[in-house]
Length: 624
Image 1: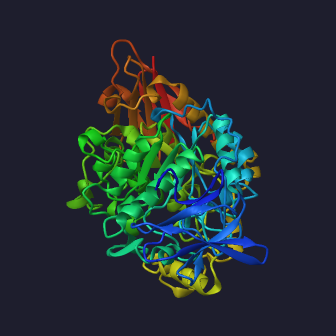
Image 2: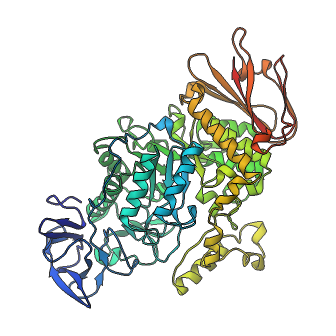
């Protein structure tokens, strides 16, 4: 919160360091500054809202400090910019202007250009650090992705974590490097033409090292609302204005101090707020007030709620897009046969895959059961919403990591099917998201890993295995014991990408396919537009889907995605494939070509307009 020109936390000024903390239950807050083996105390001034602030002349950049409340316990700063000794140690004064940026000419990307590459800093590179990720940005550029999306980096307990257990929302994780090293990563991404989107968590805090409730006197959370992680964050009760400002300033801090291009808001369905203006709507307003380039705001939300992505002028929240996982669930059921848990709500039938592609998500208030019956369901219609607003994927950190053994899609389906699904994703008009390693069908799993204390760690391990007891494969307790222990360092190490395998068969061929598909997405006029009226999809038999993309000027692409055995499609008789005059279709890419690690026997296209596919795979045809 900007108070008399200063933000919360510790910020250097000409005469020392300005400290500001919201501790509404405390009458006296002192800053304890470390001086060798002793700590010197400096009292702050309290205002009527419970903010304690003041300038400490003796503090400098690099000073270690804590806040002591009413002469009792002392705590790290809830808005600490860095925790050099971990979540339980003192905070460090950081100069937000201590980095020499060279991205002044960076203008960002348009939404139509976005191809998002999701990654986890700790397992993306062998080093598992911000600086370790920098040389690998060249791979992302050569692949054809245009943005990296980084799992949360807010500081967490221990040395390894997915990031969703963060407890220091303003501090880059000590395990990954210093603040200036994260700035270096962003700067280097921009120099390569890559945007940077950062995952942030505004629905809960982690279980270990969370001192915010102690500093705020319990005002940060409320038992009025409940989430899967406990009490909800207090966005609408007494003291909620300060809580909301804390979140707004956190978002703006990543977007301005660190130059990131956008935020992905974790589990927005668990951000419960009964205020007249929802905290998400106010967050969008604050971000849109920032000068310069457009900053992207995406939600992860399981409700299929259209208001999130409707423009503010139409009464919506005004987010740029939402993770829409229904297409993942349909395709996974169709290709891998998953039918338990939430997959039981999806059919996997090509008719319903088509509907999901065309709508953006499947559940729009009613849906068909796998038995073909209509039932009421959560969700809202998608009429009038542009396809680019839906972020679609074949896999992401959740859909891989929340499986018992962290297995990827390419572990569970034949490579011809995997390549066909890849073509479907990258030729669709939605915003595609790739999970790191997907582009070469990586062999490494992505497992659930933590590094908590022994007591908490045992609860996490037992809880993780207990989650799977309702699945048929894990009814036997002995089988559940084989699920990797999140606390084991080996679980973390197994999750690291194996970069050398990119040059090996069949990985190299799959990588070639992804590069060509992404190059087409960038150069083909029909793939560069996202208007709903220029896109269509239709079934092609029981096991194939067809998509048509048009450029608005007479050009078109046809994508035939076959997920099963041999098929023949007469393009002349299908409305989706109709062409005017003497125009005809000509194949330009088949996913089973040998350069993509296929066997080359993908099929044939006959002059009279019949397409034969001998096996699962996809063919892209261009109108001529």
